[in-house]
Image 1: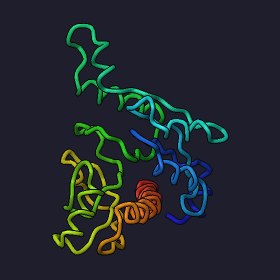
Image 2 (image 1 turned 60 degrees about the vertical axis):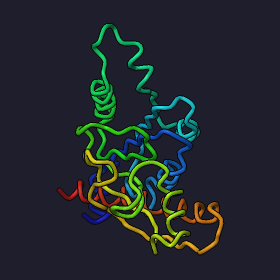
Image 3 (image 1 turned 45 degrees about the vertical axis):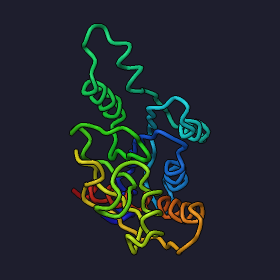
Image 4 (image 1 turned 45 degrees about the horizontal axis):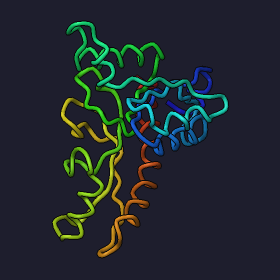
Length: 212
């Protein structure tokens, strides 16, 4: 659907973002919301499973502030009465909070918790398809390139499925890496790419949802 058609409907597309850390990908979405890069869109809720996640502060510093919620797995389980709380009920509680915000899309932007099957229509930044799934992917990709085990590295935004980092790609982007360069130089270049593609991927999915 064209941007003009979306704007004509008069309703901003609603985004919920799940984070666990500093929130640099969240910041990219904050900066892009309701601009030509991510038109007619608004982040309506940020959820973190870590109380100290700086991404919560980023959301609260927006004018007006973006509503935030914190819910971590272990404190949730420890407050259980009997055995009525499990990892599955934690996932269900996060889902309930998300659905109350009536999102058009849920974006997992550095969310360090593997969901069950209830969160399939979301996007997240990970390495290139089929490469370095899971945690510490940046470091593992860098080391593999420097050792000559791979000849390219990069990142992608993908739909979330039950298998970690195996969802259908939405945006795929290779990132330049140089022999012998320090990890920090590659890391900076990769993060800049992540900030671009998380916005691009979010817009693509929103546009697809809008036209469905």
